Length: 284
Image 1: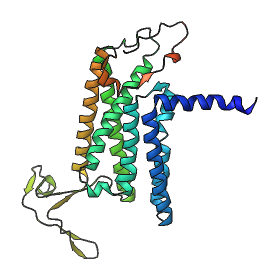
Image 2 (image 1 turned 90 degrees about the vertical axis):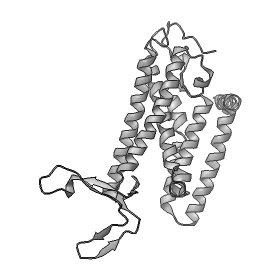
Image 3 (image 1 turned 180 degrees about the vertical axis):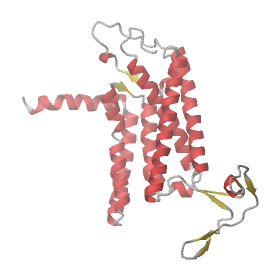
């Protein structure tokens, strides 16, 4: 086959991307270029851990394309851009740029967005399982919304499991600690007691090691080991998941005519329908 003929499909695909996905393509190029520049700087500084994060980011940038091919769905431009920005914000800005430390609510915002995005993916998966029906939305709107919500919360919980495992094995402190001024614990009750003993107005904690070394933390209170951070992450994940589930619910109710919701709902490609099946009505 002549070389020109082999290039035709690639050329048509490139033209399609530039015409239909121009905003996504521009964002992808800008972010990818930025990551490559950061990676070169990290190589020059011999910070190979950050080089790995850059390589991981470049691989994650391919996730939307892989998802579209494997699941045979079309991602709306808005959703695809949000996914790319989320990856960049988490890996490059959050980890390498230390935004997690510089901006206390950076992690909270990303976990909220993660709940939203995972609910979108869960909604799409239910829709894919439902693709064999002649009626595109034959499942009830409430069922699809609950399925998307549960999928998102499950992903959030699994991620917290991962963070806890990394902290226990490698002391990474992925579940960030919180300084509190009051605690209540039955561990401080008399032997065998089950009544929480409350200690308030804590201003410092002294750690005594096995060799007798004493170290005052100097943090202004008691150090909570990741519990409050985990609960906050799950709570904001809940908010993000609930927000998208509500959007998805009304999207199904309106048979896909909700213009705002369409910006976040992956759509199953029509050509993937089995032969002889009536095509689903396209949203206007």
